Length: 109
Length: 114
Image (cartoon, rainbow over all chains, first blue to last red; front, side, top):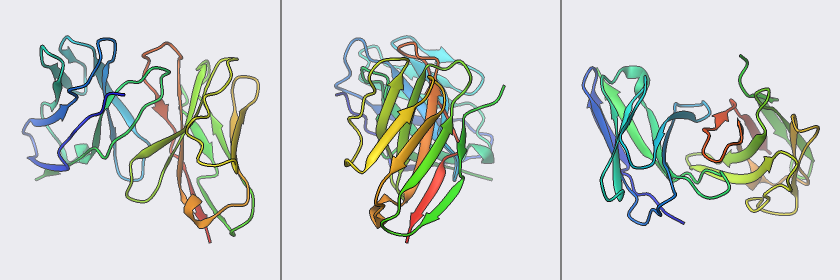
């Protein structure tokens, strides 16, 4: 099963872009990269997912390297409400999500 | 529309008692998942239901844990003879069931075993 590696924590200034990296060097060709976040005391929230092309939605952008061994989640204008744990997940066969420790993002004013 | 709901939101029980946790998925979602999150830890997969297929029970930590899904909708997670290490937040998620569809999570049930 492909595993992911993320920094334990990151800080970002309010209004600036938050760039969260993720390594997934053992990803297989049919596995997608998913990002979820969990704000304190709430259930996880889906953010975005992608296979090999860069993706953008109303919440974030996902940049996947050409070799697919790493990716970056970009929150273009971070707000205090974006403070959360961000999980990078490589989707396993059978739909279950395997959550690692994630990255604690602290947005500071 | 309504999201995933779970009840109760909090449950305190004595060691050795049985508990039932309920999940109401989003209407029309065929896939339903249970996870748990211990204090300060990441999410741990427990069980997965997809339509009428046999559930994937590979994440259940012991035979004290069981789950059922009636009529392809509501699910109940049962923990028998609860232990203190069962204390955690139990999260339910549902999805439309296509192979790569995103999962929508409920608010969770915080279980405390005293």
